[in-house]
Image 1: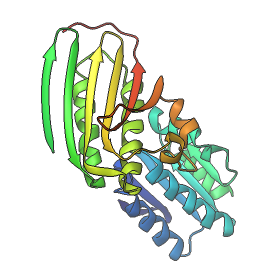
Image 2: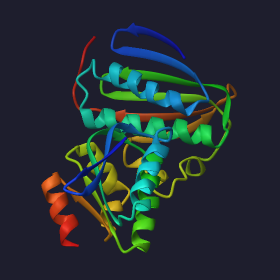
Image 3: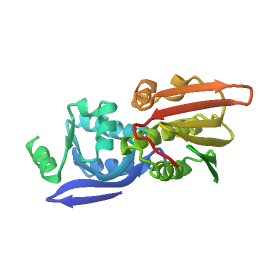
Length: 113
Length: 137
């Protein structure tokens, strides 16, 4: 899992699969970004092919921390399976969560809030 | 991880045995994917099966329910995938799938049936998922 800065926006890039075994890497990345002082986080899931409750629980944990900071969690993906799971677990209904289809949209969301 | 595969007309069987190790669940997904993608089964169907099987295995390991090795058998008939997972201590399915995010209600929307059985040979969980295309061997 990589964290890159683009236009000074921190983006967590997750590829492949995030399951119960790999979820700690996502947790570490989210914590790293929050510890750097950012309360708005962009996670790029466009190259993610699988996520289960291991990864989902980390997203919700991250969302809790971000809520406390009055921040925003923005996920980028066009993968229909990932979108289906995010909808199934109702994270997309959380007001601090946004689902975007591109970095351009995510950036607009990030800068708007 | 042991894999045994044999085919009969209109039915394919894979048998997998893995130790209680979460790092191996991704390999189970790979094997399921590889087997099901040989047939005209929709990607969404395959993704749903992978998720339910992975959740089951992960939760079983987390809750120390594994008695020795986890055993998985995959059966394909004309319009249905059936996966039987055994090597578990008996548990109610809503206690197994107890994630607040992917609980039993959410899991059941992804498959056509999710049942458990204990027939004297041990406790097993059976997942079935129908698919729309016919195939032949």
